[in-house]
Length: 355
Image (cartoon, rainbow, N blue to C red):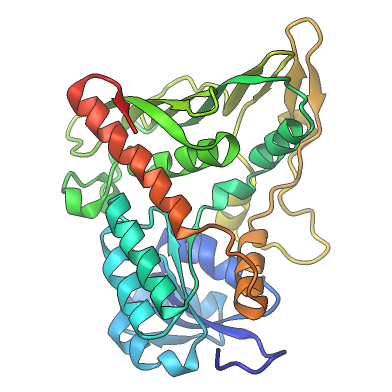
């Protein structure tokens, strides 16, 4: 790495749409030891927005222009459309740059493993932005599981549901397989990653994947059931067509259950322009949003662990500086893609498939 010790690591960000502007840029800027150096976008309005929010940043019109400046960078973050993740990640690694890729890492598990092998050959960091591992409700659930507060977990129910009866347009709703659009890969990438992180490998997958809204071309309503090798069953819902939302988590164990509603507050805060600055109450859920633990007879509120999206880039900086483990590995991302591909097959066949 070319940056002297004590000097912030210089980050190039490819893409300044919602992922780049709401998530990556502010989190990079808030991370000690990182500096947002260059943003790749040719859109004049996005450049103006980026300049207003990050006055010291430079711009590149294309990824190729960024690669030509590789000697002046220490990390590249890909917040570009899904179809570009694999070719841009390959190009960045071949330019000698460590890479953060927004989820999903790739369209297939095979492509993800190819990227992992390339990064290993080049001796470079490759990690995936699975920010939902640092949601308040997820961190709270992990803490409860670590304490054995539910006894033996039997079923994990997890939902990302929305009520969006009208199409928004854009590549996320594209039916072209090359775009890697649809909710199974969008929200499903988070749901499956969380399930695997909590309960380990999967042996069996069953899925129902539908296109519900008039004029829609990509899946907008899906259910995935996983049988984990350890015996836990995960039931995952992702939908844009849900007029009555279910609980975010309902986790059932031998001695009690944990139920929580609503979404972690960090995305909303970032979209409103708030930033995780030292001394702030970042990621803190109000008491009214706390989940409950127990049975119907004795359930009681559980204080939520604060959400911590900044932990992702802090871990990236530590991995680059100190050689510690990346926050998410490409191998883990490939395992999640194995499950998502199996879900596609299951929905097509109308039956469960083995992994």
